[in-house]
Image 1: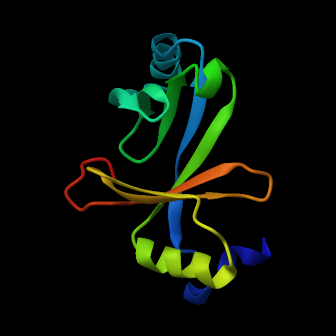
Image 2: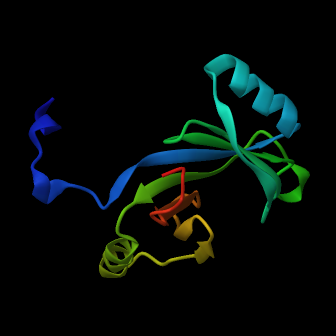
Length: 135
């Protein structure tokens, strides 16, 4: 592939894709499936803006499972999450490119911004606090 020799000037602000957020009919049943199929462990089990949510995966990647999602529908993609080590630079990039931040969040694990792609798909970009275990 031609792009395998890309230099440092071409590096993206986002470090890696970190998670995908899915709406499911039964969080426990789905978490059990991902545990059995992939050997994933539960990283988080609590209540967030979508209701009960379980994060199941490794220390570097996870699948977020929300029961019923918004409006009680299931089987849909909620958002994809990326990690950055420099959220301020990412915010500057968005501003420079004319991309609006739909939402910002500050949680115990770190700060995040949410943007919508041209088709209305939500993208989360998070910058973890150094003391947070799952980075």
